[in-house]
Image (cartoon, rainbow, N blue to C red; front, side, top):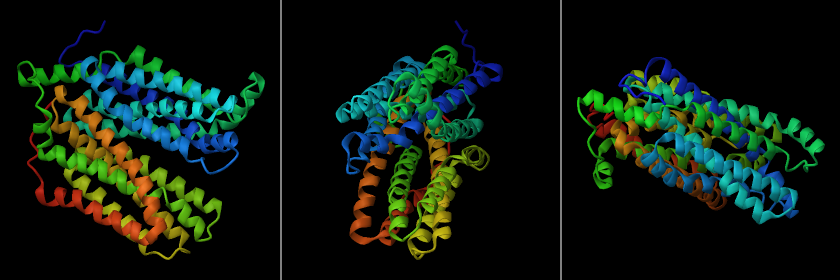
Length: 417
């Protein structure tokens, strides 16, 4: 048992909790990234065609989005630890079903597995809010940025374990196309056990205790959802998170196809994707520090401006200008990261500990759905009107949160806990 004191979220306990969240994030991202790296290959192997190769990743993304609200509701009632652990264990089940589906060449079973597989990403996303729970308001951005950066480490490790996984699978009699799922099972299982054993005391319980201590009284009840959504900071945070996700996904998910159609090699396309992903995650600690140092709103505005610059640059450049387009995709990732980290921090600032879990889950649900819609709509716009129009639409959409951040600028009252 851990005694809960008003200072429990500081010092050694705070460091232990943040370390646990970071290591679990790395393990979970390792398991997730290796599955995504070979998902399309496994689908083609089972079905014998490339037609359905994108379905496993889409189903996994849908699983990520749809699990956000239920897991957040569980966290609201029982704390961060049970919700994160359940998410990782469901992903273990999903990876196991995916492995079995590939081994017996049963595509529907593989898709069921991928739906549960995607829940690991839900836990990874919600972990950033657990980091905010154990941090003081002036350090929340940095804490969230470090946890998000853990995804970068896992995303690098995962795909590089494919060859060892296949070698191990050969000894165990597991088909080569299914072997990467063994890494997913291990990664998710380790993340679940680390969270279960070491994420104590619960971050949300600490946040509520600290809020009560700061207020000198018991924490009041949560506001009604309508009242929360009327809060200007919540509106800006939700708009920032959902619109930046839509624009980033819609413009970058179609970029490899656009580059291919313009005659660029697979190597060039690989560099473009890698640098975009680097922009998305490597800058996370810096984004968090900037949000803490200069405030959430200026960093949101900076992220929006970078996103606009990125999509305008990509849309105006001729198709043969590969290096410049790659640079635009890198800027796209950096702009998204600034918006993601600062928007998440602003949302947490606007909510009391009693309100956080469910509203944060709603935010991640909206993000996931906007990402899924963005991927589908981006492909349609690209096919109907071209890459330039797609990027122009993205720029116009980002003007919304930018205008909010620059013009409305609601008073940034002290964080609610």
